[in-house]
Amino acid sequence: MQMQATREAPRTTLRDPAYQAFTILRVTFVVVPILSGVDKFFNLMVEWPRYLAPWVNDLMPGSGQDFMYVVGAIEILAGIVVLLSPKWGSLLVAAWLAGIIVNLLTYDPPRYYDIAARDFALLLAALTLNRLAVAFGATTVVQEARHLKAAA
Image (cartoon, rainbow, N blue to C red; front, top):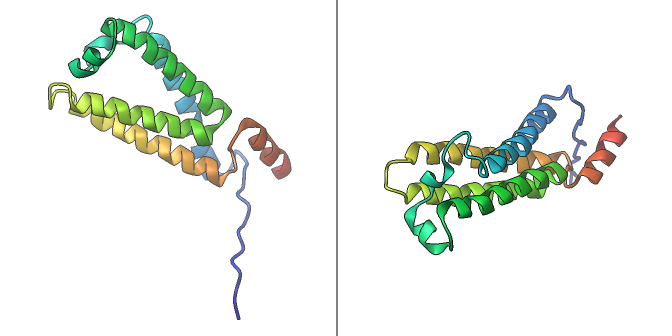
């Protein structure tokens, strides 16, 4: 006799701790990339080009600050993609963080290993957001709205 596993639909209410975790991570990966991206244009939090490994700077045309303008635009875009599609946006953020980690690990080792470790933790959090997005069926804003409406 073969038993079929039944899968219970995930609870998608704000009272569910797992859904709260999903929401917290989603807000984080919308707000932080957008704010960091905007700051690449103004350097208010930090002078961003000083974190750019020389080998990366040598690959890119223009100055380190010119490269940071491109980085800022990509980070803003990544935050918007997380807002619209947390399943795919979280993977974009994770890949972006992997690139940042490589840059930091190869820039005057071990100078920025502490920041690389922090960014590795953020990468794992982005991957966690991806898994929660899959669990809650939050592939896109449209699908998410359907799930929330059905759960109500």
